[in-house]
Amino acid sequence: MPNPWDIGSAKLLVEVGATALATTSAGHAGANGRLDQNVQRDELLAHVVEMTASVDVPFNVDSEDCFGIDVAGVAETAELIAATDAAGFSIEDFDPRAGSIRPIENAAQRVTAAKEAGADLVLTARTENHLYGVDDLDDTVRRLKAYRDAGADVLYAPGVAAPDDIERLVAIGPPVNVLALPGAPTVPELADLGVARVSVGSLFAWAAYGALVEAARELLGPGTSDYSARMLDGGLRNQAFG
Image (cartoon, rainbow, N blue to C red; front, side):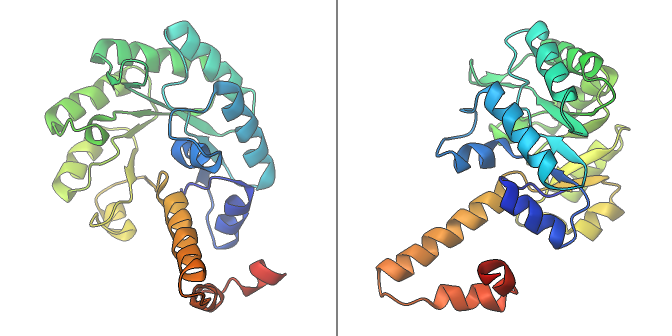
């Protein structure tokens, strides 16, 4: 389930074989010249409407912490997402206002509020431990078990990449999503571990922006255009000139 950041990237991913997609909060923010967690809820909802209308595959929504300072705010966001054509959405336990991971009890309450208000959408509950330096797998497992019991349909701990650690997450019960990171098991290997879903977060967006910067430095430096030969060799000729 790769993560496009605009209509063009969504269409390309479907063209090369993706059968489900997810938005990326950091990629969406980057496309608007901002850092992650600097997009407002109304902007996210407009993005979801635009993205889901662009392709005919299920779309999951990266809805950060559901933009709620309390459970009522979480529920309101879940209702608004459920009114779009999204197939699912996520809620994470990092509080961007406090700059820290929420207490587990509060985070679980927010999962319940999102699930109850999200109609029949698939809810992915995320613990952000390993993205914010909390490399405590026991705490990650405790959190995901609490989120499972709070109603989550899918569990996700971005940053967990070791096979033995992934197996501990899979053993919790609900389907597990894994972030495809450098050095992590391949997608077939993740499937063998019991992982149900693989996403890339903002990594595709940063790879694209990195290629843009590399090409610009070549053009504005030595003045060559070898970057375009690499792009054309990659099979994008029709997309570039069609």
